[in-house]
Image (cartoon, rainbow, N blue to C red; front, side):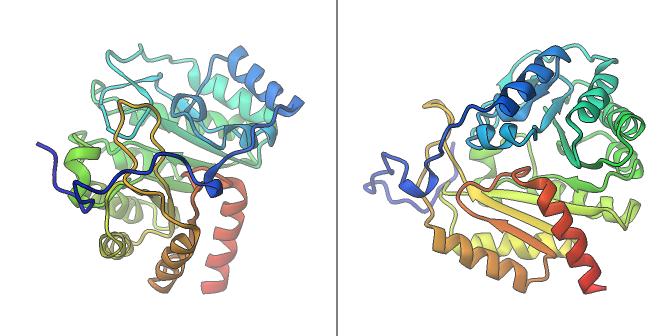
Length: 304
C-alpha cells in the first residue's frame, strides 16, 4: 500500500509543464560526435536511459554521463526510466573503452554512474574501481565523479570504491524518507546516509555529494530535514531538481515547484553548511558537473 502524501484527493495534478522547465532542443555537430563516439565504443549513458531533459545541451558540450555495468537495473524505482529485469552480462572490457572515450572527448571532468546490480556479489564495486583506474591511465588530467547505487547487503563494497579515491563520490537520496516505499522501494534512507558517512571515514578528502527530486508530494519541512541529515553525514554538495515523469507508468508529478522555491532551498542548504548547492527546476546530479567541481574546490579552499 502506498504511503500517504500531502496532496489532497480532490486536488488535480498539474497537466502541463510550466514554461520554466521547457527545454530547447538543439542539434549540433558536437552532439552528433558525442553520440557517435558512445555508439562506436558501445557505452551506455544515463542521459539516454533516464530520458534526461538536458541531453541536448550537455552532449552539445561533449559532456555525457556514462552508465556502466549494463543498461538493465535489478530494481524498479517509481521515478526512473531505466529498464528493469535480467541484468546484462558483466563486460570486462568496458573500463578500457570508457577510458578511451574520456580521452577522445578531452573531458576536464567525467561522471560515471551505473544501474543497481544486486545480482553481483560486490554490487559492481570492483568494476567501478576498474573504471576509475582506466580513466586515470587514459586521461590522467580528468577529474572523476562517480554516482553509485547503495550497494545494500554487499559488505565492503562502499569502502572498496571509496579507497580508489574518486574526486567526487555521489550517491542520491532521491526523496524524503516518508516517500521511499512508494518512490524508491528496495532502498533505505538510513542506509544511504550511512554510505555517505562511510565514504568520509575511508577517504576524508573526497568530496561527497547527494541529490533529491521535489514535486513528488514532499513538504518543505521534510526537505529541510533531509538537508540536516545529509549535513550530519558530512555531505559537501547538494543538488535539488524538479521531478519529471518519464512515462505514464511512472509516479505522477504532484506539483511543479516554482523557481523562487528552489532559490529558497538553495539558501537554506547553504546556511546549513554545504560547500555547494545546485537547486533549480532542471538541476540533475551531473548537470554542469564540470563547472560545479571547480566551484566545489574553490569553496573548500575558501573555507579552509
